Image: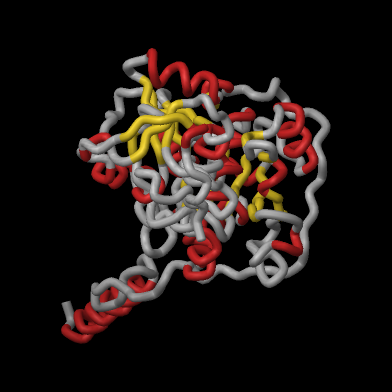
Length: 361
């Protein structure tokens, strides 16, 4: 072959190779090294994996994927910002909330005299007012992870099949680079919940059952999710509770320094610990995962967190002793323990014999 034609042929091959390389996946550069180009927002949404129905704590990326229409939940969901009081009492809602979020008052699901979960009829009506039905996905977040968990627990007890909590709350959302809105949103009420509330009465332990089972059921454990100072009776932990102590037979499940900080169950960034981390936290304590664990605290907020962690990991032997120490200390005849039974200095008495000077200052 003529050398001139050979040169032209080789040049043609080179040109074709260059254009072929340029048409390869954009993640590869011409020299074969990976590109540093970031995937688009749309690609990021499509890459977020689905989560199980029983999975409670979710990432901001998953929530954004729901909003973007890329999850099974995208067709029927509501985002709720949970805080105490009316919307104007919320520390965050009016200054910036997740797009589409509706405010929910935590008192819509609990109330006096014991701050227990309200009656089934009241909880059902509160959900219907927000347009919540049993098959609508509810995604919660709030400035207080304990209060948010309290609402999530109530909805699961009532029978909502898919309840989520944004792990790390609003900080996680903004740190992920997602925007907020200030426009207030209102819910469209529903007329039928779709099931008889509560669908899961087994998630709730009454004070009568707690007092009976702690004495008669060797597999039952009343697990105190309170500070150590509360557990040994140094303080009630609350400004409005004058008596301090624990129900006789209760075991300590840790919590944190006071009712408003759950550092044992949360990371510094506000996300909740995992099941494996909770197992480590519970090593050496007076209960096992084989026991029936009835969690409680003062009025039910803090105890909701370990309940949800166990729930999303498939445990069925769990409930909430809803009344907690607040309801227990209203009954003079009920037995009480002071100090740590494992320290060998435990004192047994009754509520009626307790002093009235242990309110938190």
